[in-house]
Image (cartoon, rainbow over all chains, first blue to last red; front, side):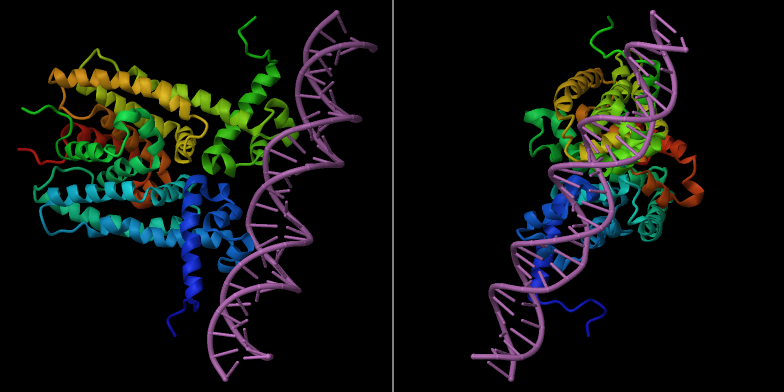
Length: 209
Length: 209
DNA sequence: CAAAATTTTGACCGGTTGGACAAACGTTAG
DNA sequence: CTAACGTTTGTCCAACCGGTCAAAATTTTG
């Protein structure tokens, strides 16, 4: 026996992965209700009944996807640690989050879609697991403030602002590219963003001197 | 003659307003494809065929809503002006944007939904009107930097970061409230956010001295 | 009031969607 | 070979959805 997970053959493992990959693509661009099983099946290269053999219901796919997502999505925050220089620690958190926006934009959009629509499927997780994690890290940050290592401010809103600014480059990618135009909207935009965010979070906008 | 707008009776004016208000509610929480005409009709207190008498197609409602939205949505940025102190000017831009997130969260979410899904209906506007406006304001900001009034950084990404941090409180409201909990997630959260953002954008996180 | 114009409704339609199901197909072990 | 098991597919269905239409109800106008 290996826990309560249903026993699965090799083919089931592979096909389920295939479906989840396809579903991530479809759900993240069309939202849950905006996506059809047919779309996902086609993207996964199989027929609809075949897909339904691996996931009985559309919701099951979404739920599985969401559960996996949350682990990787919160990993950077989990890594935020009390060892090392606070400013460096925060800087690398911001960098990691920005890299995730660059490398996993579909995951970011899937998450954004869910939250935008009121988080009907993950609200308990937000109020439980997520809140605990953030509270814990907020305490760490507060310690840094008390020690005079970083400026005193609201740790929760600080975390929000890091989430907002970094995920913006995944969720609002179309707008970012449109506004930057062809010349500046290329691959370099993430490096520009990284430079800007580093400066913003460290020094703000007041002129030096 | 009053332009090319179709002539409308008093009832048409009122009912169209009613429908748009209902549609804003429905579209902003379910997205375009996730919303049905029946839902909007019910929210507006009328039958589906009756609604379709005022707007021939579902898309027409969304289009009308989007056109109105964009004007008010970009108003704060349009007001960003070269007169007055740059830091004050930016501070009040941030404040205005945050107030909009507080007072018009549905509009923010409607917009976010559209962008998230690739902005299929407003991409031309983003590449045209929006880009022009942002470029124009970026030039203003660049002037401030050259004059030594604010720190040198990337004006475009600065604008993005203001959008991201303020709209976050509308688009991710469920998450913000869940993480802050019952005690801190009340009405005061916008004032906390305003204080935090002011400090972030002006001074960053480096400790004083 | 009565005619004309506008508004509202019930019934209906074709297409789509999530999902069920049994039959067919393939694979593997004895 | 063949029985057992896992996989795939074609067909079908009921619910839903966007939209039409003609007729009824209401309001406006002369």
